[in-house]
Image (cartoon, rainbow, N blue to C red):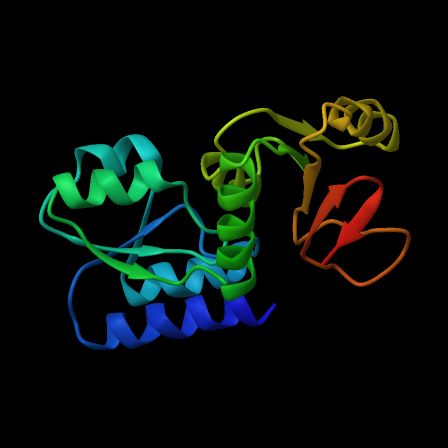
Length: 178
């Protein structure tokens, strides 16, 4: 994923400056790469540690973060190195705009995955997260209130044997728009 590659490159560049750099969550789902970056000086923290951190530099990984994370950073005087994947950022914008207009948001993915949590954080109304075909069918029928719905798919999901992909679609009146 080029988003993860970009996040790693940004981390390496910052670490080469010799300054302390924190990363909110593992930068990649690869323990060997995380260990390599740790040996370079990257300090991985969780959200509780992030909330207590002040006057520091923090890298936000490619998965993206909800708006509350940026607000905490502002309050705590944290310098953010934002490595959110541009595709993920686009999905954040789409779900934000459409959910503000009343659309139901359906998210296909692991409800505990950081990318799903980031997407969820950009929603302003009804949100349904599902992992199975049965969940998709059940939740898709909740979009019959006239507002339509948005479908966001976690980037790491495999869909019918295809390459991992990230997409958002808008459904209104039975039509899908990409």
